[in-house]
Amino acid sequence: MSTYDENESKFMRKAKENPFVPIGMAGFFGIVGYRLLKMKNRGDTKMSVHLIHMRVAAQGFVVGAMTIGVLYSMYKEYIVKPREQEKATQQK
Image 1 (cartoon, rainbow, N blue to C red):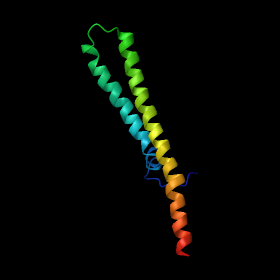
Image 2 (spheres, rainbow, N blue to C red; image 1 turned 90 degrees about the vertical axis):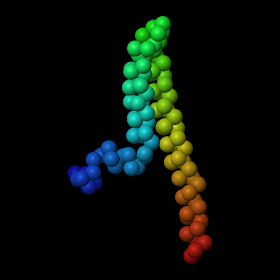
Image 3 (cartoon, helix red, strand yellow; image 1 turned 90 degrees about the horizontal axis):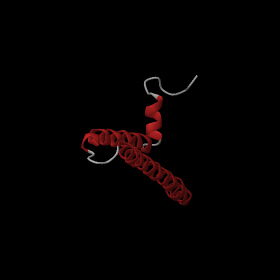
Image 4 (cartoon, rainbow, N blue to C red; image 1 turned 45 degrees about the vertical axis):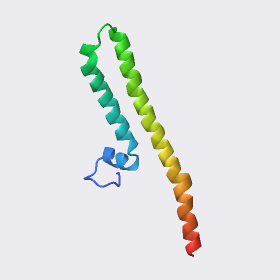
C-alpha cells in the first residue's frame, strides 16, 4: 500500500515535487486550444502546415518547461544545498 495521504492525489503530489510539469501541460493544452480556434482564420495555409506549426509550438513549450525544471532542480541540488550544508558546518 502507498504511504501518501488519502486526501491528496498522486498528480498533486507530483505537481508539488516538480511544478514545471503542470506548467508544461497547461502550456501545451493552451497552445493547442488557441491554434485550433485560430484554424478557421488560417487563410491560404494548408491544413497540414497549420497542424505542423501547432505541434511544433506546443512541443517547444513543453521542452522549454522541462529544461527550466531541470535547471531549477540542478540549481537547488548543486548550489543551494551545498550552501546550506556549509552554513550548518560553520555553525557547529
